[in-house]
Image (tube, rainbow, N blue to C red; front, side):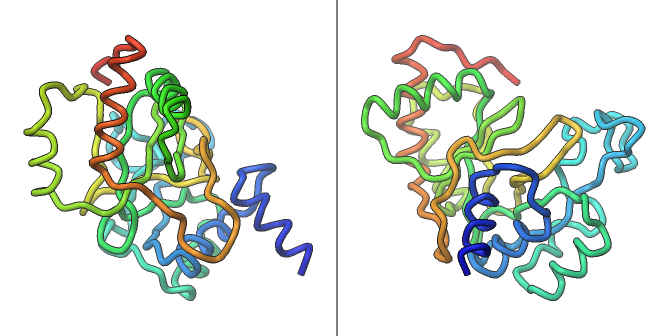
Length: 219
């Protein structure tokens, strides 16, 4: 039992290079987050995507075959996918029973999280790629998001919202843009990780970016 728990902690922290299937099973069967395999980048050019689009802007970090609607929490399906595609990135179908996310460029995100830490703001898991960090939040509707943004005097144009019908690559995936890691890892355990409301995160991020004077460029 100690060995199993130790492997799970390494998985959640992102230490080493655990098998993708183990992470996918944790997300799907323990946390009930629907997942599916992303596009595997070709070995001869990792900056390229394995999908038919030669100008793909998120190489390896999106679903293609199967499509997003195939995302599932079914253990047998997850095992079958990664047994056949062991290096495929793990793609989360955001919304519904799964978390949504708010993302922004990595440098402004780092400054924003530091400011939020100093202010005592509680955040849940944060997913990091070399270019962007994504703060996981509770599921929200498009109407809820629209009202939230309409009420703001200013919202950085670089903020992206991964809501119902969206997707996000999860650790420990490797994509054409680089590795996907936990900037803030979930606590080990069988329960689904706690995540904050989208209102609190957007309010806090806009406040932090304004307070630190760090611009979030249009990326």
